[in-house]
Amino acid sequence: MYTIKKENISLWQLFVLILIFVIGTTVVVGAGEEAKQDFWFAELIATAIGMAFAWGYYYFLRTSNGKNLYEVIEETCGRIIGKVLIFGYVIYFFYIVTRNIRDFGEMMKVTILPITPIEVISITMMFVVVFIVIQGVEVLARVTELFTPFLVFFLLLVFFLIFASEQIHFENLQPFLAEGFKPIFSSVFPLRSSFPYGEMVVFTVLMTSVTRFNYVGKVSVVSIMVGGLLITFSQVIQIATLGEDVKNRTLFPLLSASREISVMGFFERVDILVVFILMLGILIKVSILFYGGLKGLESIFNMSYRYFIIPISMCIPLFSIVNADNIVEHFEEGLLVVPYVLHLPFQMGIPILLLVLVLIRNRKNKKVAGGVKY
Image 1 (cartoon, rainbow, N blue to C red):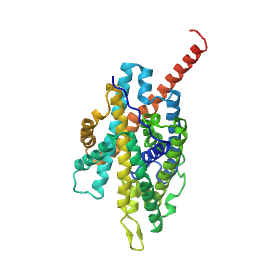
Image 2: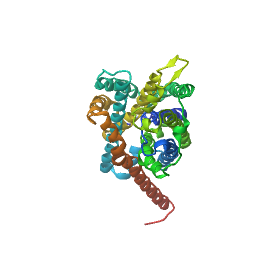
Image 3: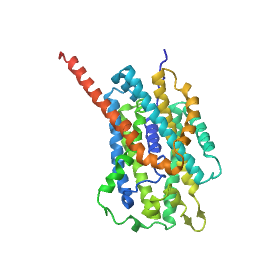
Image 4: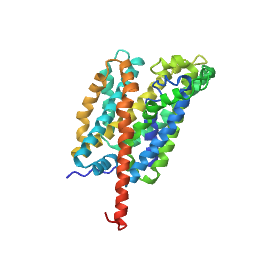
């Protein structure tokens, strides 16, 4: 019988994994039409919700005695229903992978590879993802640990150069709360709370691999806070530079804002830095989601997840293309359909139900241990 190998990562590695996962495509891809110039405030609220998500997922695992998501599902729901539910999460994680691969391909087409077929871009990215994931989560954590300083530095450098170019117009952020809180909440829920913070449900597969599990909750919350503040600051820069109207009509607003940079007639067209940020963010995020889905297959078939890497990786570029006919349809599906149909059930509904079942089971076990008979 196959025994699942235990892999370990440190608290710092968990911190950088969550940080890059959260930043991912979020800092670059546009959204927030409902909140208009107040979208940065909506992002702050979403960050607070994200911190609650992080602590909630940790509490869920801690209550389950340190078991990961798949182990809890099978133990709580039984063998047959459990495997069906696990397979649902596998499909969910792989679907998010296809969406992120498509984001990457569209970004490359817009920027530096306009005549390269998007299929070639997607396949090339999957080659890198496969190489990382096949080594295991420990190598994935080390890769993230290595590149995180570069991503954060380049992101802050882009912010600084936009400031230095005197392209910031803070009047674009006014008036504040002109239409009240309703547009803010419409933007926050379910879209901005589920993307990217709710997608952290995949870390319920990874958190139990941390060597000092008792500190996972605090580290996760701090990581979300740092990532959320960076995203919020990015939104402020985008709105103040482009204006609310232009930002909301732009697919990649940070990229457009970076093209406004001109410092001393020397620092210009640094949008390649934004491309690097997106490239690295998607690489790490896709690797984490891909690993999470593969571990689900490992749980279902009781075989090493490495057996599934090659066949699944060959399908993902294909489905990333057939998911949508064009980039507009791709973004509409991700912003209007996916949050309600997939994010809410898999990020909130099922974990809450599992938590209730675990708490009921634990309560019964305590009563039995205390000598109470039924």
